[in-house]
Image 1: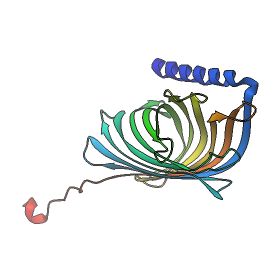
Image 2: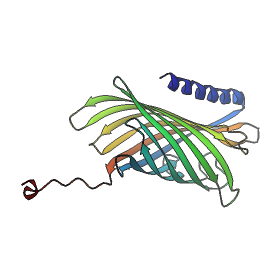
Image 3: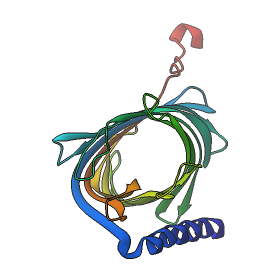
Image 4: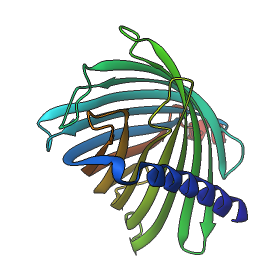
Length: 257
């Protein structure tokens, strides 16, 4: 827990430093977004797992495209509480909202991550450290950057049943950019959310709630102010866990004899 608290404090101090540097030089717009995601975790064998993910992010209360994201990866179970892995993601970002980019652009992303889970009485805690190599806008500027992400999730059961469960989630993720061309957005964004989850069965979970995306754009406006999106977002997430392994066949009566 001491290590966890140290990481959280360091990241919060970094974020606060960025906000303090901005001071009164921030130009903030408030926008309303809709996000949907579908994630599958499929066991290949007891040690390896395939990760598949699709996300559709919509701006202007769903009227316009914000982003399309698809991610694939391979994860290895180090033990019951720790995962290590990585993979590839393709992202298309549109020119959306009150502070649009000059043009839509694509991104090819390679990611590596370490994830751990722990139980603190009735609370489930998840920590994830993700490192990304980003090849941005290959059709135009074709630049490379790196990004570090720290994700923290706190989950607590609300109503337990034999097969189903209702639970609450608080989570936050901090994004920090790295690279020689990162000028105005060393602090990239923060995503904080409060969700209500429902365990449909042993394979499917559904979560819905509110997410706040506080996004610092990479350029200044005409008054030399940092451009910031404060995106109020309705979030719906589907998570499926299953197996690619064939179920063990039960011996027949003949085989039993």
